[in-house]
Amino acid sequence: MVSLTVIVPATDEPATLKRCLAAIAAADDAPDEIIVVDQPTTLSASAARNVGVAGASTDVVVFVDSDVVVHADVFRRIRTTFANDPELDAVYGSYDDAPGAPGAVSRFRNLLHHHVHQMSAGPADTFWTGLGAVRRTSFDAAGGFDAVRYPHPSIEDIEFGRRLDASGGRILLDPEIQGTHLKAWTLRSMVWTDLARRAIPWVALEWRSRSLSPALNLGWSHRISAVLCVVGAIALLTRVWMLAAVALVTLVTVNHRFYGLLVRRLGIARAGAGVLLHVVHHLVAVLAVPIGIAAGVMSGSNAPGASRDGPTPAVGGDAATVLK
Image (tube, rainbow, N blue to C red; front, side, top):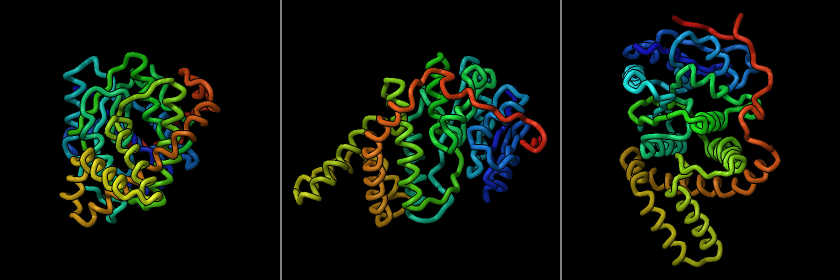
């Protein structure tokens, strides 16, 4: 049996932590230990996960965000996946299609994440810490999360996955490994996160590595959708109504599966609002491209170890709560 340690970063005193831990404890084939990193409060999510891994004593570490309620079969699936494939280094899953927070923006944002992961099943060159597992030896060999370059929740998991993949590691996205996301979003927090915490650092990462991965939000349908949104916006501003209509129809066609999901889960009216939010999401991504390239140029090398040599907090005292 593959042994598991679940690591939950919780240095920001999340209100959802009790629900998160209750679901972990109640799950089938519950983990051998749970490490909640809740001190010091100045510790970033990346550093907190590194601290948690340093204190783990099992074959595999499973990262679960404090606002995720895992499904009952998650750990059984993770154990079976690693047991059946001894050469696999990491596996991660997906949010489910029943987000816990109300409101049009929250439900749209969480369903978008669900859809992207559901459509990206199979071998991956990235990683996700919302609900993802990695062999301890593979984590250590890859150097852990870059807590220096990413002092705030950002794309530290994506960057870690790219390093693991570049070193020959094998990563799998299994969309059947699922959890319910409890995070509440506002339009402002969505735009800020998409721009400053996701798109800009992701473009910078692609620039530094001189590659363009087709993973997740960088897939061709997303790139085409972004171009269509720009064309549609320009057409509206210049009152070229026919071009705007063609861009909208094409956008709906390209994203018919996602918009169908929105209709099924939200109803027609809220699905319409979801289409508008999707346009905003893509326009923000386009805006991030020149800013991200500039950030990539200024941030220098992306070689392994280039920015991960900062101090790593030691495990001990009240840095982590270990629940057997």
